[in-house]
Every structure is written in structure tokens, then in C-alpha cells.
Length: 434
Ligand SMILES: Cc1ncc(COP(=O)(O)O)c(C=O)c1O
Image 1 (cartoon, rainbow, N blue to C red):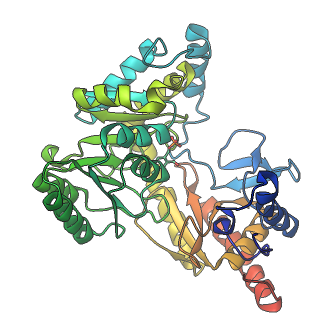
Image 2: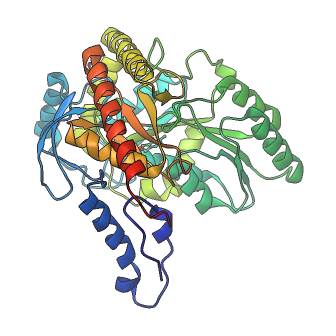
Image 3: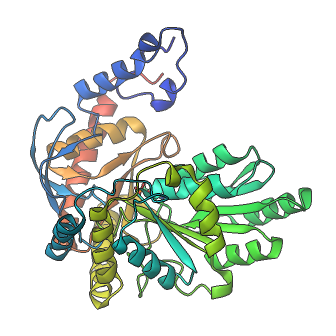
């Protein structure tokens, strides 16, 4: 039986493996804990928008209470395309042309002409023979690994790689080696060990180009070299930087030599391309295999024609001159936020990117800070243990090109004041830490 956990203590890890024969009773402690956090005002999740997500957004809490306008750093729309009139027009035109439904698996009759054209553009941009579209980036990452990796193969994966990659790995094989985050030496050792133990089997290297909790990156060219050296198949998730970073918009792969490029690149449209959806770019034979053995692709309805049209119209802007201008503005907005946070005494980490992780302290301080921040009209996503290490709770600010420096200064001021109030409350109150 799970013990009672206080609103400022505990984490989701207390509730992930409930025991007992009665399912309704054994899942009750989680609801009780969430309710306690709600009552204390420290449950900042599942908030509800009642308008478009821009620099400012009208949001209510999970129960639709307290709707008001916020300064918004909690939405992922890095180049600000989600409300762009040309994108909205593309969505409307797709509805007129195709209706709103793909009406079938992509393996049957779910693909549209726009989707086929977008696949070709993605493949050409990334120097691959082919690409395939998915309704979500999660499905793309999971499918790639689940389809290609056999039980006797080994996966060498960054310890902090995204859930879709970790779950794919867990599903595919028991031979999963989790390497120290972004540590090339640890990867080299694991790859060489895997290859020497199993000369006949497949070895896979799986990581991300920009990590979404720490805003940091591995040495992609070196990883490409190591993969070639041991004959490993290199899978890279470019969800956050593809389109939003680099001079041409290709992201952190820009400048990596053709011969060192990952064998399979997977990405998401949900950060920069204004819609749900994802893709895989690879050789034609890899695509053929994933098409039939990646279950989320074959056994699920295809990405909708509206999503394809939005991704496609966004793609043309992102990889044209306007994309460069928007990325330049994004760099300025990111710099302004990082500077404003440092000036206010906050610790931030990682490299400048659309993700700015701002540390606030342990979980109790962070939860109380989130409450005060919301009271003062600022939204940024609280990330706490177990998504990040215990005691290293942070706000993940997601920056858009149009945020600018005035909004950044205001956000830093609100966060500073919110944290002061939180620290006062923690030092003056007794709270249970189970
Ligand atoms: C690194 C990474 N990979 C994959 C995904 C999944 O993308 P999507 O939101 O398109 O399912 C995300 C988004 O949460 C992500 O951050």
C-alpha cells in the first residue's frame, strides 16, 4: 500500500507500480496525491488553452478555473509559424481538397499527394534516398527501433534519450547499454564491447542531436566515426533542432560530413513545423523494412491531410530565406532570455537553443515557485524528478522567434520574485519529505 505522500514531497515514482488485487483501489494514492497538490496550488500540469498559443496565451487550470492571459514560454512553436496566416490558409485549402481525414493506414490508402511530395523534400534535404511520414514523432522513433532491432542485437543508447527511443529499445531487445549522457568515451567503449561480444549481430547507436531537458548535444561527427568504425547502425533524433537551428535550418547536423551522417534520421513536426507528426529519413531498403515491421506505422491511421499540408507549408518557409530571418530572430530571443535569467542570478545550462533550462532548486521550491509564477501571469513548463535528477528541478522555457528582449526581462523578473516567495515559504514551513 502506497503511503501518504505530501504535496511538496514525493514524485510519480511513488505510484508507478501499485500492488493489490483491486485495480481501482490500488491506483487511488496517485489521485489523492495529485488532488493534494491541486489544493496547495502546486499542480501546474495539463493546463487548458482557450486561444492560440503565442507570446501571450489565455490559459485555465486543469479544471478550467482561473482563465487569464499569460506570458507564454510553455508552447513549442520555435519559429512562430503555428498562427501564421499562410499556414492557416494551407490547412483550409487541404480541408477543401482532401477533407479532414486520412481514412486509412499509410500501407493501404491513407497517403495523399502532398504527403508523398513532403517525403521527397525531406529525403532530399537530408541527403537520404527516402523518407516516410508518421502521425507523431513518438511513433517514428519507436517504429524505427522496434522494426530494425532484433532480440540478439545490442543497442547503445544515451541515458537521457527520449522516451520514444528508450521504449523502442526496451521493446526490441534485452541488450540495451545506457551510456553516460553525451559521453563519447562511454559510447566508444560500449560499441566496441558490443561488437567484440557479437560479431554476427547488429549493433545500434541511438541518441539525440539536441536534448530537450539540458539543451546540450553530443559530438555528432565523432559518433558518426565511431559507428562506422564498428559497423554500427546510427539512429539520430533531431526533433528539437531540425528547422530551428543552423544557418540553413538543418540543425546540429549542419557541417557533418556526408560519410558520417546517421543511417536513419527521425524528427518531429511538433516543435518547428506547426503540427503533430514526424518522419524518418533513410535508405530505401530501410524504409521498406520499417514500413512493414514498425507497428505504429502499419497498424495505425496515417497522418491527416491537414497535418501534412501544415508541415509542408511550414517546411517551405523554414528552409527558405524567411526561415533564416526567423532563426536569426530566435537566436536573439534565446540570448535575451538566457542573459536576463543569468542577470537575475539563475543557473542555466546547455548551449543556446530554443530550450532554456532554468534551475530553481529542489522539488518543493520548484513547485511553490511554479504556483507563484502562475499567480503572476507567467507560463513555463516545470520539469521535476523523475524526468530529471532529484533536486535538479527546472523550468523549461521554450523560446519562439518573436519573444524578444522585453518579454524576456519581464519573465526573469517574475521568476525571480516567485522563487523568493517560494524560498520564504519553504524556510518558514514544515513540509513532509517522505
Ligand atoms: C527528442 C524528442 N523526440 C521525439 C519526440 C516526440 O515527438 P512528437 O511530439 O511529434 O510525438 C519529442 C517530443 O516530445 C522529443 O522531444
